[in-house]
Length: 137
Length: 224
Ligand SMILES: Nc1nc2c(ncn2[C@@H]2O[C@H](COP(=O)(O)OP(=O)(O)O)[C@@H](O)[C@H]2O)c(=O)[nH]1
Ligand SMILES: [Mg+2]
Ligand SMILES: [Zn+2]
Image 1: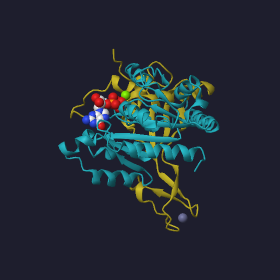
Image 2: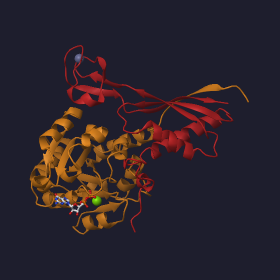
Image 3: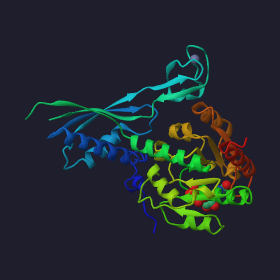
Image 4: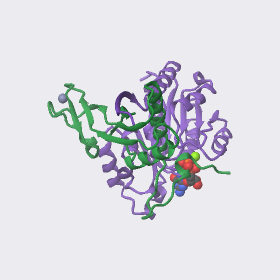
């Protein structure tokens, strides 16, 4: 018997026949785990909001992270918490002169260092899922 | 109701996985075993490619396979039937492999005895792109029936791969798949990627893939 993956279990067709994805679930589980750990460490009674930084290179969708969070956090200290997601820029460091500069997802193929014109660069940020802080009671 | 306090968390959600992945990479570097992570949508041809690779490498490289197909053990059995050591991982319904699961696979095989271990990742183009498996090389397959617009939908996957295999080119004459447009879209996301066209059915282009593999393994082992 074929068994559906976590991604596929709740993959339904949305209104316009667009796939609804489950890909946000594993990340959301990790967010909740870390949030509850810090809530306990700080003797919080309730988590009101969580400030996240997600790199612009991520294909995951903010709305879905919130929806899965609502679902997973039921009955925990973090139930009802708002995820405040800030999309962080894609930063590249020039391999020739070490200048760091901002890049766009759609133009990752033609990177050019604004300082020296070098095309080779190393990704500094843009793929992160970072929990910065949270508001608790 | 109490006052609202702000607590600093400062944790990278993927930190654990990044650490475990780095450990896997280092361990296999020492064992001189190159780990290759093979990704694609379901049905693009990962298992077919592995079977072609078994044939193509016969007598040259010692190959092992880690299977993470969520459906069954069918794929590992297909590979093992060709006399290649294959480990089946139980991904427990997960939609991707993480570095900890890969560690289990490696623990179950005598890695020192292989030049190359290929992971058949779970079939999807989203989650496997986010989770580093610890592989030294990331390879993806896009098959012609999936269409030439996939780089728009899954840019991260195309950005992280070292090689793109466009499979099922035997379908090209039956479709409006635009290879030049695809190449342009992929290279715009990732200028360092190599693109090879293959058909696991007819065998077209497979030699080029085998040559790429041999060159990469040689470079990895420092023989070149
Ligand atoms: N026509 C054609 N079919 C192929 C080719 N490669 C694989 N297939 C078929 O596509 C189906 C899925 O292949 P499989 O290797 O199981 O895909 P996986 O899910 O990515 O492992 C099978 O029926 C294969 O026989 C190809 O190059 N051309
Ligand atoms: Mg398969
Ligand atoms: Zn520069």
